[in-house]
Image (cartoon, rainbow, N blue to C red; front, top):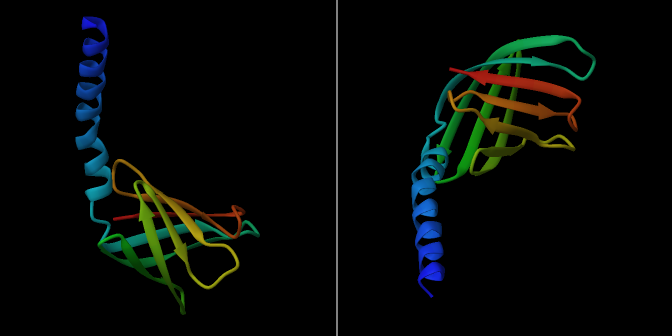
Length: 116
C-alpha cells in the first residue's frame, strides 16, 4: 500500500508542476497588432498587418494586405487558434513561445506568420 500511495503522490505533484505552464500558454493574451508575412497557394508572397482581439477565448481578427481587408472570428484551444474568415477552410495558427503565431490556410497550401 505505501508504494501505491507514493505513486499517487508523484502523479499529483507532477501534474501540479505542469499546471502553471499550461495556464500560462492559455492565459497569454494575443490582443494586439501584428505584422503578417505569408505565402499564397500559388507561391507568391505577401505582407501586411493584423489587428487581433482576444476576449475570453473569442478571437476577432482583421487582416490588411495591400488594399484588401479581411475579417475573421476564431476560438482558441491552448496553443491552437482556429479562425473562420469566410473561406472554405479556416486559418489554423499555433501560438509560439515568443508570442508569434505560425499558421496555414487554404487547406494547408498557404502559410502565414504573425509577429509583433
